[in-house]
Length: 251
Image (cartoon, rainbow, N blue to C red; front, side, top):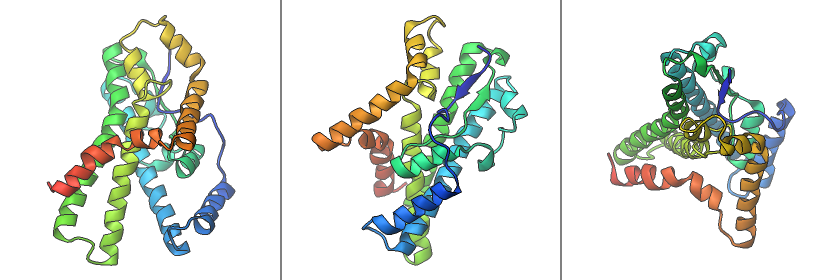
């Protein structure tokens, strides 16, 4: 194995400028919660938070790989916080529509690691940890502002809203990427403890698209027929049980 890719692959649709226009129109015309002006603002906030969060996630992969001795991501121009070096348009569109998205995979060559298995574990953990810590930082800032200044004016209302989105998006990214499904970070971490010829690895790599589709379909079936949105609940665990208590209890 020469290259290991960390984060989700870009294997679905390719979004264009017209796709984004369609999403904007959807927000404006078909939601019942916001005025058209508010819908556009929410849309822009979502994009902004998504760009920043995914960029930090991918930078964490590239930086940890570099520290472990692999300069592949650096040579590919990925050792940067510039969002446009990391983002996948299709992943961005899917995040807007379904709450699940991805960036372009960070190229890593584990053969360059100083310690092969330790390198894979550190690199695969770095992205998830970066999202968790970014959400934690956002929760701390939110708590301070909420208990001191509060939503005293329109500007502060938007600042608090942006921080809330940072918490929610990073909860989603951390918990989604920790799933042990190829090529997500959780899969790379778990399989670093296994032999290369392990049957689980072979099955997961071969059927990764089917596994992801099954997870989404089962979640949809549970929501439609039982009324349990288990996927959204799972992706919001960190938000609900770590970030929100920080806000309510203060820091």
